[in-house]
View (cartoon, rainbow, N blue to C red):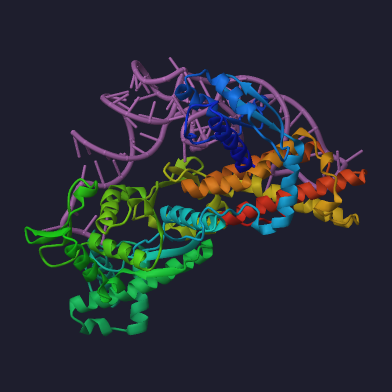
Length: 554
RNA sequence: GCGCCUGUAGCUCAGCUGGAUAGAGCAACGGACUUCUAAUCCGUAGGUUGCAGGUUCGAGUCCUGCCAGGCGCGCCA
């Protein structure tokens, strides 16, 4: 609807310019908003005020000129007015809102989907936690956001590929191997010291036990280096399986798992470095090889190959991102923990060094999660790490509540996650509030069927019976649903959808308490029954995008 | 020291990319179940948008400087 109206207005402005009524040549970006105040119409635009300065005329007059050439062929506009400092307010005819009901029926599960993606291939890389331990709540937030964004983009006609980058190379792998080896030796009765820098969690002990039961004392015959390397790889694959299990339980599935180790095995890091050298963007200094990132906005150049011949983590990342492009992705979205934000400029710079536009890489920074219980923070030490795993949280509060809580806030604001609140089945908990609205509608429909009422189609109802203020508000919200999805996709902000759901549910609950859907008046019953059915569909669709279930009974 | 993020009601947070009188939920108080699910609803109260300037018709939103909190500034990953 917004789109239709926007076109009407810009057509009008164009006509005014053609006839010389307006002096400007270009139409500034047209902003159409739904005013909070109902007395300001269904939609309002500030275009006259924006143009006023350029035109050298008072904004009210500009507004009058624009309105004078407005041609509403389809007859969607009830009336217009010029308000306040020069807003143009539009009041639409009721029939406009009813048309959404027909659209929801016609498009079914596709309602809400848009096409701004134009089939572009986008890769969403998220979580990408090192395989050195189980996922914690912070990863959970990244997982929920990454997965929801992927679904949002899919709904906007992007072709989405979800990928997990496995950081299975480097010093943390050595530490993993060493940690397991020490537990392994201890398990075989050797006396060992367990240093602070090693991974402390009990899962390391479990992996060591597993190594013992599967391989016996085999590793005792290896050299220390050999044993560490072998146990690191044994441990990493075990931990990775655990991570996959955790994600499965959380309902997150990847299209691809990309191993850093394979990046090296396939010589992709070396080749990426060669490419950069050829472009004259890598140079040697102090025995190391540097990438010129500073010309592209980074504060200094970065090392690709250390003076000892080893490549840096940055080098693999450069190669990894080059590989993403080589695989044909047009847009890259990385979900990162906010503690990596210092890394953003150099990553973007490296893309520019490869001749890419930095805008094709979008990095969503996700802030920390503070776990709480009844308003009190839970200590997050590595030592007491057990309770902060994603698995434990999901087991305690459930998948739906966990997802909703993770998605409720803007990614870049810190999140307080209260376990007791997430479990509580009461009005303090927004998850159930939304799901309950869905279940209630299902219940109404069940009741109607019990009474032998045939579920109506759009063609069977008289929409004009739906003229209560609550009904019109709900219709307007349903109309806005596709716009919410699109805005989430453009801003990469999934939290807009939980907020939309809470608002929709709120008006529905209020409507439910005040009026009856099933009554003795058959025509009214039919109209309302169809109407609440469309609300149910939209709630279900939105929950589905968030990866949350829409129960029919609660 | 430099950089990034955050600062909005007692608490947790929105605020549609600069719009009209800043909004929700929770907590508090008072009400509503013989009617499609009370995991709900209705009402009351709650604000110097961290502080000070600036930009303009108009600022929670943009620019500058402070203050507070978090994070980052490696030839670690």
